[in-house]
Length: 239
Image (cartoon, rainbow, N blue to C red; front, side, top):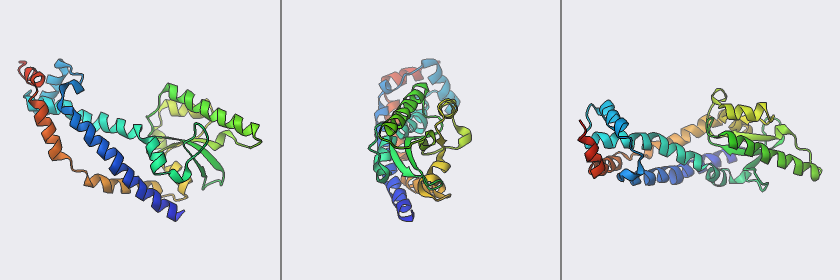
């Protein structure tokens, strides 16, 4: 699996650079328009003062932009691109089975696994649980019709990142109610590659791309432009 490992690492770096970083920059550039925010005039002025000690247009712009670019925007982008991660990075494991993202031979037990990929330990909701269970049940029923032996343990949810103790109640319900395993990142990547240290290598590889991503000057320009908008200037005059 060494060749596969190196290929995955290289493709993961390309995916992060060409998908996550580019989308993040594009979404950030939209934030020069106050309409991109649901502005609460009470909290926004408060947060500007909390952040910088004043409610100047520049401070208000920072209070609006920082949470978006450092939290909501990038988190949403990462989660929304998991299917692209599957097709771009794990294309060698692509599945033709409906409702399944990848198939792989488990390097621990030697059994083929049918896997739905998810981003992290808090990235599904109640409806997702039912959808996942429905897809898995459909695969098991189809296998029976075709005379194939597929068990509940062969249907797995694999997480790109996150630890087992961080799993949300929705993920736990997939296991407790429906008996399908949820593989947190370390376990998932170990079973996929057979390398107990692969998850750490993957984090390090993405980290190499992250170091390239200095967007500070562009972000300052976005803050400056937002600070010049009439709605932001009006907020700054609240005393």
